[in-house]
Length: 455
Ligand code: GAP
Image 1 (cartoon, rainbow, N blue to C red):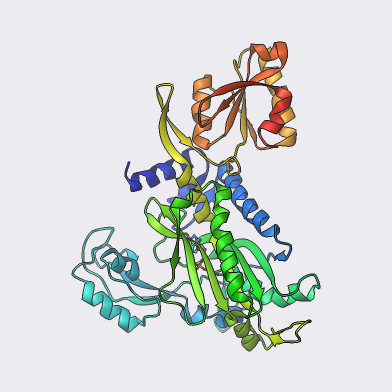
Image 2: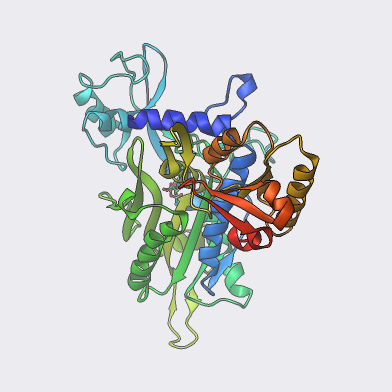
């Protein structure tokens, strides 16, 4: 099975079984957007809850939910208005809008993020003979132009003279502008972190690879504020923790690797990404970056508000340094789907199975009556189902088709166990529990079920 086939199969399963739907599908779609279906909502929530739980294990991590809209100056201070660009080139044959750096990368030419438009055009001109449009295969392109990725809005803007308003391009800026508020609340002192989960918006030139590059997406970011002296050690600790974290999601360590940024942006002291081996190759999942005092200094400069911290013990005054961990919810869900998708054969029948870690599974168990037309079985099964649902709402009732079909359907959505209520249940209260991964069936007392499914 080729890598691209796997992604196609995942996209198709995600739609068929209600994980992810293309955005605005009945109107022909809307590029860079996807809608979470019933199972996707649960899987996404499992991803977010696991991340938040890992953050909350630290007693010095605060939470925040800042607004999507902020004063425009925030994005001038952060450098996004002037420097958050991607190079756009248009195919003159099919009019597709493409990322010039991605086209160059495909022919082995690396464009530096810091290059000016002139430099990019020189680089592109030098490689024109090798570059093909990925949509129509032709080789006629226009000039490369730098396009700002900030999405704009008319919120509170009533005339052309009113300032340009932006949707946030990262949740991090909401954290920086609230750092003082959290500190002044009196429960935290340096070192401490602020964690936030929320939507971000970017005018991506070519959204692609399913959930990997969207225009509306979600980030889980944590900014750790620390003294300049302690920052290098804290950075190493966070790097170790974030890499080990993916075990909780059932990701094999061999499918993860570190990649150091070769060209550091001028303010970054060090920058590493955790990459996952997606079906389209090793790509960024999470950034763990040491940003120095750049962000707080910029906001101090632009807002006039003092961002320094007075150490109560040493009496040193400094602008805290920032260590950032930043990962996309969508890229994590895509990784979890890629990691768990498999095709195998069970009892001589081919099946598709999502071998999701139980923590990630959107449905923790499915409950079936052996036969749907036997009232005694159905009522006993309903009783077991209601009992389980009280302690774990993520259980599913399924009486559609024969048992084999129900197993296949539950395998496809990654349900770890299926519970069947049969004639013996009526006699002794025991039920059959069938494992998704091995197909093995065991009999257990129905009173044992809540413990067995971990609720
Ligand atoms: N505050 C730092 C920051 O925003 P970034 O590398 O631009 O850094 C962080 O984004 C993470 O957000 C990425 O590692 C990725 O997981 C996710 N992300 C970024 N752009 C995305 C997009 N267009 N679609 C989906 N996820 C995206």
